[in-house]
Image 1: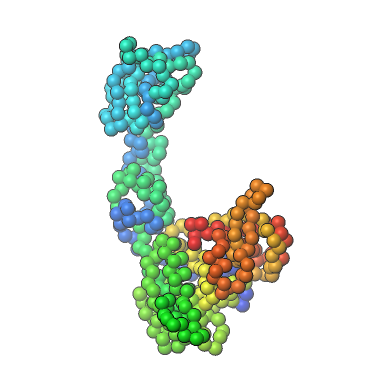
Image 2 (image 1 turned 90 degrees about the horizontal axis):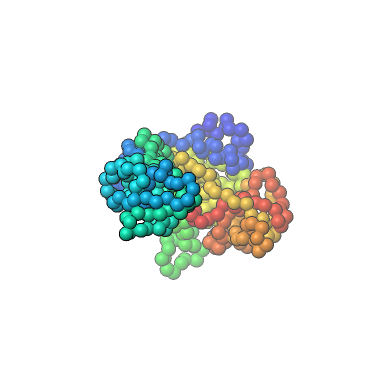
Length: 423
């Protein structure tokens, strides 16, 4: 682990750039968990373990794209109206009808199989129907041969890969697998992620009265929510652990034995009561970094036994920023997913920002459409202290200020991670 990290370009444990830390974490990840089979409706949000290959054509035969009349494109008159004799009706679910002689058409409903030899559907609103003569009249120029026909296999061809392994399954994916008749889906086992918070000052929510000098523990609830939203984890809550080496040793040992990943908050700095760092180093192989970022400078990454370990800072906003900057992508990769970077949009600052070059900064902001219609704009949510969790709650996006950037004037464009779908 130490060799991997130290060989990366730009490695500096006292001021590690965010991109270098991400590279190191990616190289430290173990193999994904084993696969299991689950019913189709239980696969939503899970990570696909194998390619889904189409065992049939979708649709299985040419069919009508709308209600109307099926005909031969070659029967359409070059000039003037086309008159065709009606020969029966095809409904969705009917067997394909036999081929009709030239000059004939067949009433057809959306989704019905095209009769043999017919290749075009004229919408019913385009025709004049003459029931006394049993025919329709199609005005000139309203239709081209081949129109309004869905081709067999145009959605999925036989043998085509419909979904790739590593995909996090979305609602449309479940519908796609259903169209292939898949009742069971091969997915990766959910990661078991243990969370715990450290600190003598922390008290569980609901504790009354709150003792002097104490605060309610918010970090476990934030971590639980972020992991639930991620959708690839089974969360094991190991509670609050006191700043006591024996208690910490027991808590980390138990969590590592039960989980694939252990995530803790607090105790990775250099305070006199921060025993977490020493206990982590005693129990496993752990790297302690000071990151060139704000908020969230201290971070621990390593292993205790077979479990991957993330030691996050103790301040509430730093916990969230560190999770989205490093842990989220690592967990997705570890779960077998093909990670995609968080979506970014470009927005103009409504006011100037102070920024220290040489570190990546994450600031909370409110993104909206500019009044002049010129695109997106963003304003920060007041105090950006790493303990001001209310500013994260008020925000709808996270400004990402580049490592090399300095102070930024009003009107400058910055990257913003929108919270919608994330937080």
